[in-house]
Image 1 (cartoon, rainbow, N blue to C red):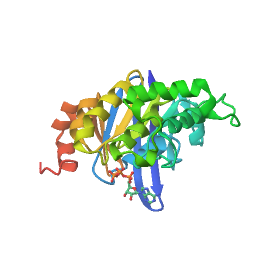
Image 2 (image 1 turned 90 degrees about the horizontal axis):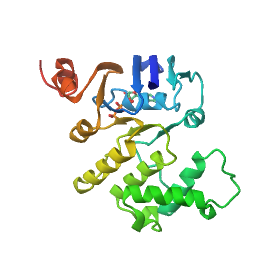
Image 3 (image 1 turned 30 degrees about the vertical axis):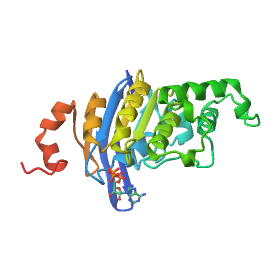
Image 4 (image 1 turned 60 degrees about the vertical axis):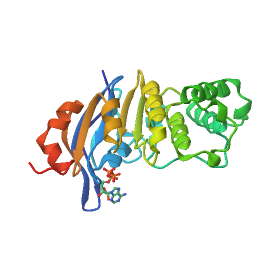
Length: 246
Ligand SMILES: Nc1ncnc2c1ncn2[C@@H]1O[C@H](COP(=O)(O)OP(=O)(O)OP(=O)(O)O)[C@@H](O)[C@H]1O
């Protein structure tokens, strides 16, 4: 079953075509990697697939439903969550508080006027996520006081909390020190189970270990897609992406 698809998507910024005729299908419960050289259009595609940008042509379908002109809130209501290239955290909030507020924002039934920190269901959800991230001991720390690697992990928790079936991740390993990569990789593998995940990532070794399918963009177009082995062996990919002369 297809969870997310785009058909003939084009995205122009003035005269510049950032995406041209991109058609892709992402199946349920599969992990996809999205790679390509700088400026290939990866973030633009994530923005289009999450409703943050309206494509100038073509359309996006979520669970078989056309999302023409739908807002990013409508995409979220249909079960799509995402993380951003740069952290979306608020430094003054606490770690658990950040997760509680994220879960509240994703819970349609939650009354906005209630103190979310007094809501047992929200706190239980936040604590469960802290356990999955290995961050229980940091629950009461201020976000701004955390090391960068922990902040990125918390960002992932915010993207995955609420059990959205489709999660788009934009460079979750960016700026993470070598020592924190393993923990982040394990957390993503565990959180991604049973969901459709599309991850943009420049760290090739991590991406090739996590992704079952890889899509290669270059110059705003789909250059190749396949398994890690297929993509590695593709002469066009080696030329465009790895800078090899073929
Ligand atoms: N809002 C915008 N206005 C004008 N040009 C834009 C806009 N957003 C992106 N672009 C251009 O579109 C192209 C694709 O950008 P995008 O950020 O999607 O690439 P990317 O593959 O994610 O690159 P990177 O790996 O460097 O993050 C770039 O040339 C960029 O300058």
